[in-house]
Length: 252
Image (cartoon, one colour):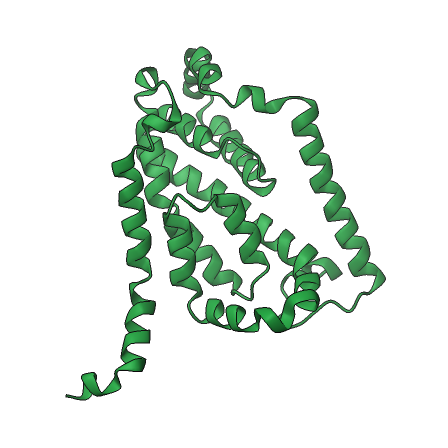
């Protein structure tokens, strides 16, 4: 059975909320959940545990627990990653690093992909359900051209945003929810686009003892490589625009 919240989340991109009591109640409940999650993170000072020093200090304990309770450790890791991504908490890079030294580069990349993609979907749907109708009403006419262009080239744009480190992961989740991008396209581009970065940090997690800061991992050559990959994802769009402007060059 579909609830009013589910129907609103999965509605056609061009439809808007009818302002029904059920819809308003759903938005209030989701808003309260996010406020409680953020409040708990701040109140319990959970950010204190998301540091490289804390991770190093508990390295042996975490490894021992993972070896003894592998399935449970994987489950908890994925759930924590989902929560971190959904609520846009800091610490995504550190969690990926943790996964690397606990599960190995390849398996950590896989587990991170599950957690980060699931969390990104929830953040995307929350932003779409809570804010997009208001944005459409407020700025609809001025955003039509941008919305249309993004919808037509959504996969390439999202791949670029996921690959280039200059765009924060949580911001892409939220902004994407305000656009008319199809959910399936968003999921595919997110799942594929985060693989290179996840693998780099997971691989670095295997050398945890020799890492003193996260900036050592995201070195200029690595950032440049991600940027080039992101620009590569834009090439199909550039090609289509070039062929549309120069149709005679294809006929000759």
